[in-house]
Image 1: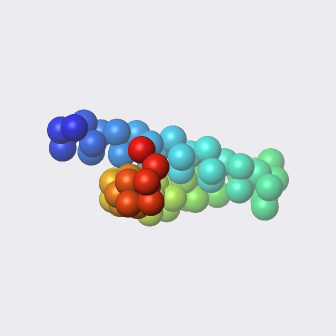
Image 2: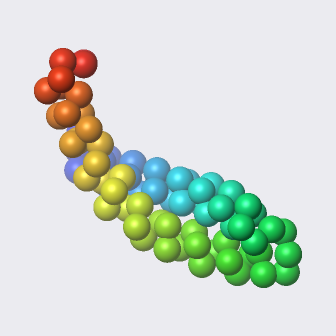
Length: 72
């Protein structure tokens, strides 16, 4: 797998995960009120920035762990 593919895959995964998770969490905690959009954009941005390194570095570690315990 090329570095370019892995980077783009990680960025897209991070974006969609952050967008969906922040939408649900803001809807549950704040509700659909006038502040919803700004709270969602703030939460989504923070979530995206946090999830980028996680989605890039975690999958290879999980693969190695699964191979080590015999699941392939």
